[in-house]
Image (cartoon, rainbow, N blue to C red; front, side, top):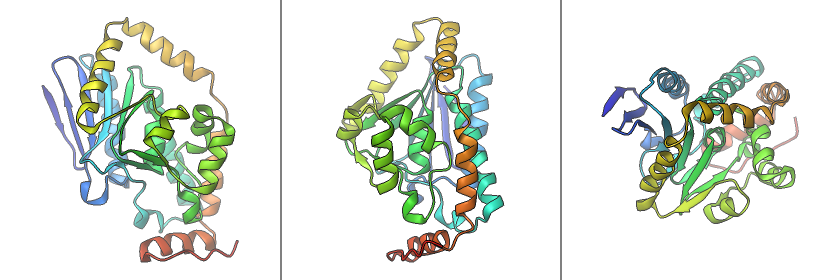
Length: 261
């Protein structure tokens, strides 16, 4: 077993060549901050460069959350330019996951909200635990999903359901996520990792060049310029009063009072 040291990630590769990456900020429900995003970027490169790794599993530490969203304290400091810059950075990292030459499986163990849902959607396949809840509540902060969520969710669940999820900000539980195709499987917590590894082993029986080509071919069907538009809209919203109110209300644990300005 090979291991690598990060501040907010646990990374190891088993004897079968399955790499398991665990988002490890349990005190913050594994929320994504700038350091974690940088480490995630490094981990993807590690997977791509290591010929002994054949499948990549991403999950969260503990049993409450996969990734409960972005770090709201960091978000609350954004302006239009820094907001757009952060959106493009997140999109770039998640696109690297989506374009990874090796299959990437998200094991969604608990809450996957905001950036967590976007991370899960960037993976090729999603396995959820029975307590999982997936959603994008960014509108409650006066924002929109900024790491590719407005683009990937409609492709996965359809335009109408994506509109409902993003405009209401309400998450879906594991059973509904399975029903709408947002996840591939739902398992009890104590069975989910072994089941995910079994999927990985099935993939590894196939030709690695064929797997890579299949990933590229499927991704090619969904390419468009919507990601750039998402980043611009995300940045614009970071300069609004509603964004300041939304993030302040979250941090102060009160209901936001939006004015549309």
